[in-house]
Length: 480
Ligand code: NAD
Ligand code: UDX
Figure 1 (cartoon, helix red, strand yellow):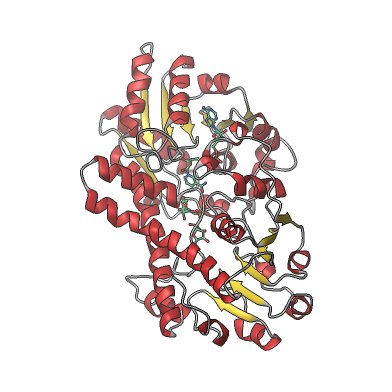
Figure 2 (spheres, protein in one colour):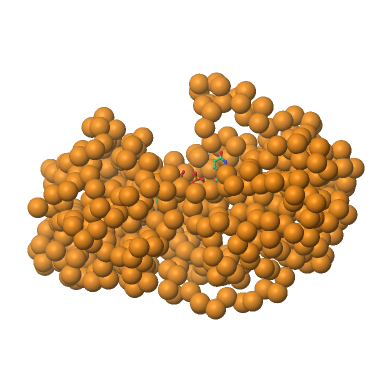
């Protein structure tokens, strides 16, 4: 029986290992973490992350061939394959701060593997890491080994949150990179055999280590670049009277461009895009490629521009001040169908509005008050350092209230900002909402999910990203 251990029971480690356990009943899978609360939650009725379909995968396997444990060393020492799926945050201090990946958690996991191992192991990079990380990990492992053979593989994860289970069941591809040696090829084959339980062989791609590591950064950079491209177009649409949805549709029908990932929004969020592009930028700079670095940096700059453009639009529409005005924030997660708030555009939008002294009433169906307050009081990039290491008492922000219902959030508000595309926001009774708001009543749709014409008929002044402007907004000062 092959034994697998995964270090890191987070958004990637938990669902990925649960799917392996479900699809490979003869393999024993242990997911370990230093966070006691996370492991307790994985072993409870209420899993630590909200992900559609996750319960149905975890519950049938848990206690049979899927185990969640804090006994990291025991499970690592017993495993044949060790996945490492720990955080790889952006460095907040020192060399490369604000760009480079912080490999502290990865390095400590690698040192621990070297210390506790008594048999040969395949060590799999599941975390997203800078290209050439495998070389550093190899050095750590081999310098400490006692004649033990470690083979390092890169097996980056391409799942998206909210659709993680679907993506894992039916991946576009699984990528495995390894050393081009007989031992490397054998290790690749072992991992391939695991995925081959449910992934068609033609979708399991093999590559050298550096190509596999770089492919992950490249994929996220390309995806994020599409969103910044369409968001840049959205600004031009607003200035010219074009409609970004029509532009997206028109260009997306070109089979070379394709229709996916062309939705204009208040900006992309999530734990990966910004972090991985910054990492890519740093690697380019370190390799003497400033032009390439600047090219990718622009993707982040446009994303920041889109968020501040949204805030400016809100403030300028409301007579250039939101001081003391109640603004309802509908949605705080970085996308629908997740409770994850890492790098959500809602943080920057809320901070921008608070900077103009607005009073915020925030509602998200999956995000807790504690999490929202922590996010609004945290410094940039601190979010990706394990939760148990973060201060648990966030600074109280008086102008923020967090409520558990959309209607409560919008009551007596001057304006509504829709920041996450939750389906329930499409179905709200906007007639009723209008009656209970201050007038003029504004809706700023950061996800283009409401029917703006219908809302205008009710009496709302509506801003939709990249759409022809409401006559009211046209009369307001230009937005920088
Ligand atoms: P996460 O923060 O949800 O989980 C990481 C876990 O690792 C935490 O629970 C933390 O306590 C644990 N950990 C840290 N150091 C440890 C150690 N030394 N020993 C044991 N446990 C340790 O992060 P995530 O979202 O699962 O991401 C993990 C990696 O996967 C990152 O490199 C990320 O870039 C990459 N990734 C994430 C996604 C995504 O959608 N979230 C997708 C693809 C790739
Ligand atoms: C992303 C990648 O898609 C995934 O392959 C990788 O493994 C991890 O990073 P994730 O961040 O979970 O996944 O979600 P994704 O669906 O990519 O959305 C990221 C952000 O872009 C969200 O804030 C989303 O709302 C935004 N987005 C996405 C848009 O603004 N417009 C779009 O057309 C698509």
